[in-house]
Length: 193
Image (cartoon, rainbow, N blue to C red; front, side, top):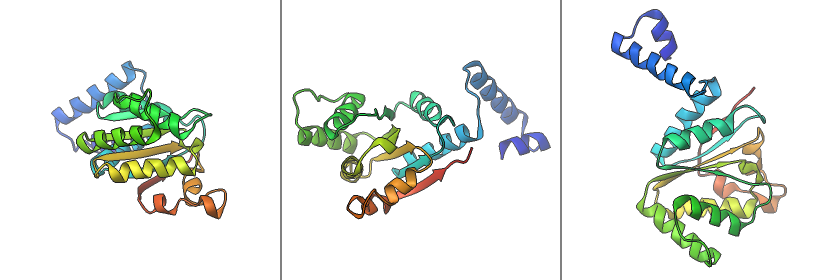
């Protein structure tokens, strides 16, 4: 851990200056590097680098939204999408299209899907879905298909409550089981308060 190395004097002066400068910049921007914030930054980096699917969960108010949004604001290839309480597959694809700068008005679901898939096949992206526990089975499957059909050029992070993994693992019923998605999840992190 960098803090342990810093305290023990095992770091060179230039590395110490970089760490201190980075910490001061975060404080000036009102970003407090909590354990959850730092862990999510590393996890989102791995998700982007590996073009993986990741599930992140914790209790409400833990700072997941802030960490996810901050990450996406700092990375031009990361897209933050907050899932509203009321959502349909059409609205989901419209939101993704808007965030990717793709046309969406007047297009049907399949046209939006094909545009998104084509864009992701050409441009490496990380799609971060906050409040993902609001998605239903059909929407999770659409996103899994987008990830699969994006030719391995995109990562997807689902951020939700502390039951996020269980929602994907076991749907409300056997019919809503998302085993095909769960098999493709590479990283799962449920943070305790």
